[in-house]
Length: 158
Ligand SMILES: [Zn+2]
Image (cartoon, rainbow, N blue to C red; front, side):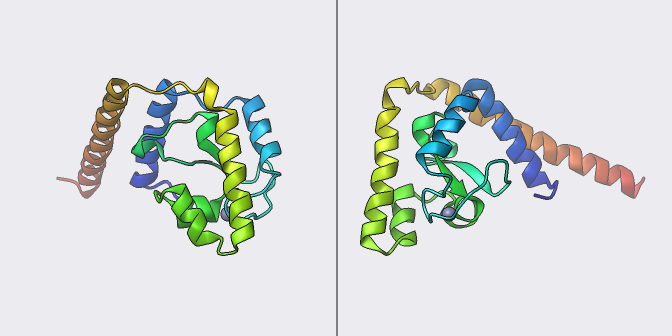
């Protein structure tokens, strides 16, 4: 991804979120790869570890109330995660993506069983903490814009 203002804001957002909601441990990442058989949970594309196109997708995006918890994560290819699903509810996306009924049922069940397996360890992020995160990420996004304006003005000169 090019180092654009949008990229910088996204990095800031993720860094702040990880400070209040830990990322998956290496052991949890192992479990994710094993459970989804090194394949995209949505389209079934084969994935390789360490490959940039292998994503740990959030079933419910953090912006819409999701967390980094393992019960909210599935293995996904970059195309499904970044380009196609985006903020669409995962079940709607899966329905659209997999017209074959048997295949759809198998993938939906695999995701639901995975969520159920890890439901017990789920720790929610409180609404108050989430609100502070929204304020801080928005404030820093604003600061990025202001800094860009200042450095561009400096380059143009007086
Ligand atoms: Zn995919």
